[in-house]
Image (cartoon, rainbow, N blue to C red; front, side, top):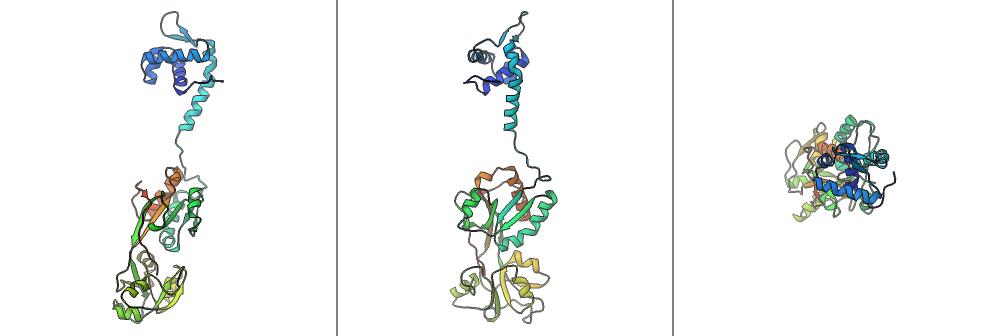
Length: 318
């Protein structure tokens, strides 16, 4: 069906209603407009097509479509059906989806959230794949904008302006030692803490100095860092097999409570705040919404849509 220039959705709907109802009053009621407004649309249709599309019925009851109007009906239905399909919301079907979701995050949140998230995804969407990738600070904004990264998980001060985000969890730090450690289960005083050998997780910068050392330095103290590793995952088994102490986020170390004893360190340390961030262009994407809901649940949050623009929170590693 070739439509004349200038015809809009209002006239397409009017033509459809007139063809169905064959009565100006009934067609107006069908569209929720007044009879004069419908009559005005009928006049515009005649002007645009250059001929009458309807004539008065001989019995005075309604109107009858002309052959031209009847010829327009099949094409009109295809146009309206196409527009209706275009306007239908996109529905994401987890059970049949083969999508891959990419999450940029460091080891600590990966170890804390990874297993619960994978189990939730596998239960609902067995063909969906997850990829955990280390964040590249220089390329992360472009990756987020282009959809190469679905979600970035990290501290609030790593977010770009304009990203949408939600806090996943807050955490504090505890010190771990192996079961049966010769120093016993008592919480150490600060001098004993400083004298004990420590393991430090340091992914960048000085490998033998972290946030614990910075906090001690402000007190004019230092500790004995006997070993440094770059991986959070390496720390618990190393501590479990040695006499080293290690101070890491509580949520991480609690997962190794069968082999480690945990206690509060004898000095004040900053808290850790982990957020999920995504690009606003994906905020209402059905698949992305489903994935984020599962991420929030894995983090122990209620399944609520609350989100905020990017913010800032302090964090540390050591």
